[in-house]
Image 1: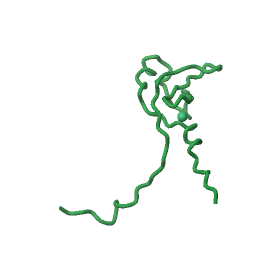
Image 2: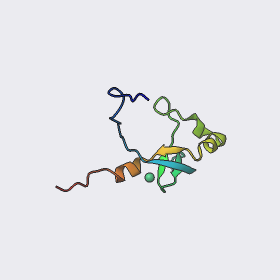
Image 3: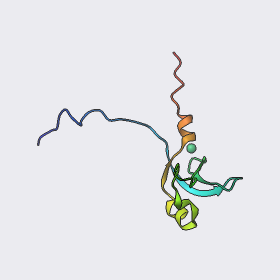
Length: 87
Ligand SMILES: [Zn+2]
């Protein structure tokens, strides 16, 4: 069995993002859809081309099809911000 050495081994780029599961949806005051995540946070899932192309959010079938998908929760990311080192 050859073991690959050098290129492509060793360093993994670890970029931690909090992936949360979409458990439901709600609309905000401006009628923009927000995904309800399993961490309890809400995250906008706008269809706002060309910045954000999320046509699926426009239909119930589309939204339903995304239930259970993971979404990167920015709120959780902020909570986890490793800015707590005290030295
Ligand atoms: Zn969260």
